[in-house]
Amino acid sequence: MTERLSIAYSPCPNDTFVFHAWAHGAVPGADAPEVTFADIDVTNGLAERGELDVLKISYGALPWVLDEYALLPCGGALGRGCGPLVLTRPGTDSAADLAGKTVAVPSERSTAYLLFRLWAAKAVPGGFGEIVVLPFHEIMPAVRDGRVDAGLVIHEARFTYGQYGLHSLADMGEAWERETGLPIPLGAIVARRSLGAERLRGLAETIRSSVRQAWADPAASREYVLAHAQEMDPAVADQHIGLYVNEFTADLGEEGYEAVRALLTRAAAEGLVPPLDPGALAFQGASQTP
Image (cartoon, rainbow, N blue to C red; front, side, top):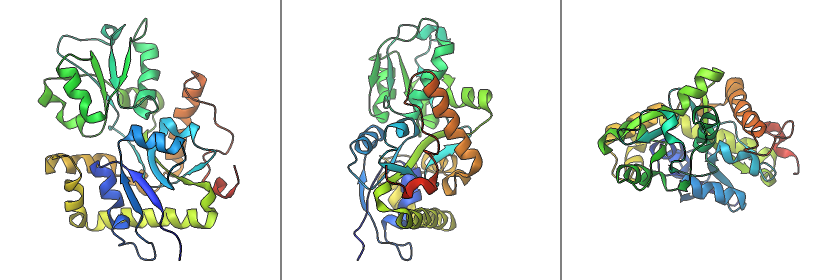
């Protein structure tokens, strides 16, 4: 009998929606994995330490883990109109106002932070000041209460920041799409290369099946999604799923891979991430020994 795989993903609605069927043993021929729920900063660290079989991580963290983990072509988060936002209190009206200011971010290895750094290099003369890493659900209260000057937010914060009296100073996704014309790479699914090519291909098909089941019967995952959504309004959870679960979740495709390569190539040129080896993102390379 094949040993059960271990997986870590966030309690956010898009992840629980995508993985519901697999996590509950509802994908034919696939055992339910051992699931760990964790914030993206935690899963990025788990991947860097090689602690689990399958993880949802930031694309911004991918260059540090590709020796041990293969990028899977499905299950992650790419899209349009879904980029991270820079939030501030009223009175901060331009990007230049962030010069020397304290900014809270969800992870220094997050895609959000990578997009922010690429944007700020052009938009914030003199550069921002201190960076503070906070769990994403603590960022908006910190900005509202004046503990930080600005916050870089992800996930459902796109829909709820007005409740905190904040406004959106800049949309990192808009800046990225305007400059590249490509979708925004946010979260990646990676799996141990040591599982071997055959098992990795089966794993990718299991995740695709889980996505297809979620789309075919959204009600089946409803209780699971809301139970882990930190008391989120069901309507917000639906908006969240609608924004982050799309055709790229089922298959990255050529455009998805192009977006990932563009992000990491630009970031490497700025010295923000290690450069990629040729073919590092290719799924068929998963069978190779690092």
